Image 1 (cartoon, rainbow, N blue to C red):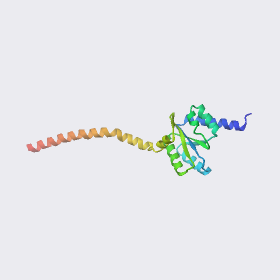
Image 2 (cartoon, rainbow, N blue to C red):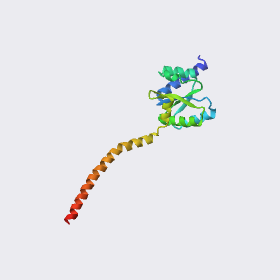
Image 3 (tube, one colour):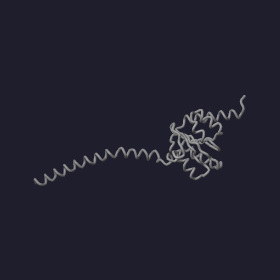
Image 4 (cartoon, helix red, strand yellow):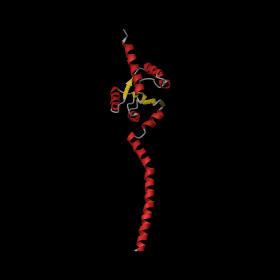
Length: 174
């Protein structure tokens, strides 16, 4: 029969491994000066965007990161740390974390992983300051539409000139 502590460690490690594999991105944060209600409000804000905050013991977290091939990230796990696993939108998750860290000095995002790319603090801030997905899609559509609209406008100008020229010839003959 296994000890309760062993079962807890195995369950925590399994959950972290599963979430690393299933998530679009994950972030490592340090929450040294946050109270329980503050952590709960962060969890609630993350839950609305299909993200999750998971707190694990540092030894377990380091071991899982090393086993998953992210040894560079294991150096970020120090002190009271947690993982935030992003659901569908890593940008939205980073925005929630960035805004929360501005309001609460006790929380800092140390780094993370986005599509097999290790994120530093600067990368995280850049990601958090990106416009939303809808805004980016709108900007892309406008950028794609612009050359076509310009071409149509130029072609209309030539037709308009031809019509004006023909109209002036007609007026002279009358």
